[in-house]
Structures are given as structure tokens and as C-alpha cells.
Image (cartoon, rainbow, N blue to C red; front, side):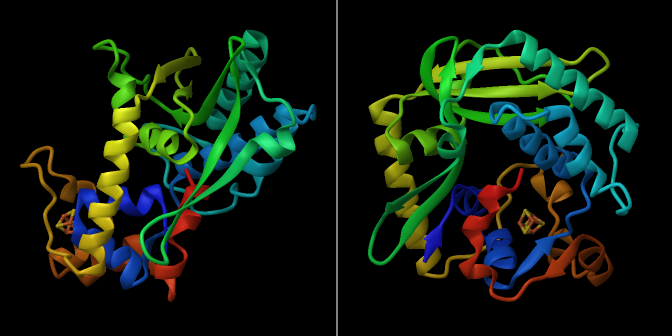
Length: 267
Ligand code: SF4
């Protein structure tokens, strides 16, 4: 069995949600504009490091989504997102704080780690490069809101960064956050993951896999209303017995239990 960060985090959010997604094969429809834009933007960044035209790459990738029925949020439109993307690329190039040498090798780096039994853990790291001249693991994020920077040290608690540090053994990690807002902004957030955090994450993975293998899929979203994640969960239609809601949000993909690691390719 191949596990990914997304699988572990979905199980920890709600085991029932994991079952719907990975065992029953129900997957959220790929119509969210923000997610598809994130994928297109990632291709534009790859073009930049490969010394190609990043704006042209963004236009080309984003154009493939133009005629789909996209779900936009907060007044976004296809044109507006393209314009923001081009401004963000311009800002990123002018900042010139990130270097990725040998981009064909150091972008979308596949890392696989054998874990208990016949299991392995797979991830695709966005990049391994340098921020302000110091080597680190890099993750790209596109968002319409700034990432919080207070209290100091918050980023070190990010579970995805801890996971990737555990997988690679690299302690210096950074999120490069591309903020789509009226005045676009690029945040360069870096932190250090400790040995203890890596060790504890490894234990969390083992423990989670044990619970998955013993078929513990009781529903528990964990937080009370109004922060209850059920309100934004794509599987809420199943839990409420509302087939109409489920069909509006989901598509069935047989064999999904073997393809979970592919989630690492998505935003
Ligand atoms: S709606 Fe709530 S209980 Fe049901 S799968 Fe989603 S998070 Fe879990």
C-alpha cells in the first residue's frame, strides 16, 4: 500500500471522510478554480526555473481550464486570476530570492520511504533549492489571503512541512506563498523542523496506518459548530443521507485506494 501526506491528513481530519475517498473511491469534482489555478501557476514556476517564459506558460495552462464550468470564489474571474498570476510572477522574478539548480531534477522531486510491512510513503516535493542563498525544501502555495506569521514560530507546526522534512531528512523548509489580492504579494516563510518533530511525525504515520489497517473509520470531525469541518466537507451529503448533495460535489473513481499518492500532484 502506498500512503501520502494527503491520505494521513484526511484520516486525521475524519476517518469516515478517508473511507469515502480512498476505499469507496468518491473524489471531489475538479471544478474549483483556485485549485486549478494553483496547478497552472506551478507549471509557470517550472517554466521560470527552466529559463522559459513563465507568463506564456501560465496563459497556456490556465487557458485549458477556460471553457470548464469553474467554481470561482469571492468575485474571482478567469481574467482576473490570470492578471494576478502574471503580476505575481513578475514580483517573484524581481525579488530573485529563490534559486533552483538543475530544475529538471530538483522540481517536483519524488521521494519514497519504506514504512511498516509492505507499505511505502510517497510525496512529490515542489522543489529543493535555495532561499536567500541557504539550501532548503520549498513548497509553493497560491492563496487569496496572506498566511499568518504570528505568533513567531507558527510555521514550524505546519504538518505538511513536518511531513516532508521527515521524508527527506531536510530540516530547513520554506513556504513561498503567492497571495492573489488587489496588490499582490509573495511571502517567503522559512523555518526549521527539529529531529524530535520528525521522529514524532514518523510515529503518527505508523499509528494512523495501524488504525486504517484495522478498519477504524468512525466519523468524527473533531470540532464543534461553527468551526465544524463537516460544513465544508465534500462528503457531507453521504453523512446527511443527501444523495443530491453528494452527486453535486463528487465523482466515483474505482481503484482509488491504490492511487492516493497521486494527490501529492494536486494543490
Ligand atoms: S461530513 Fe463530517 S463526519 Fe461526514 S465525512 Fe465529512 S467531516 Fe466526516
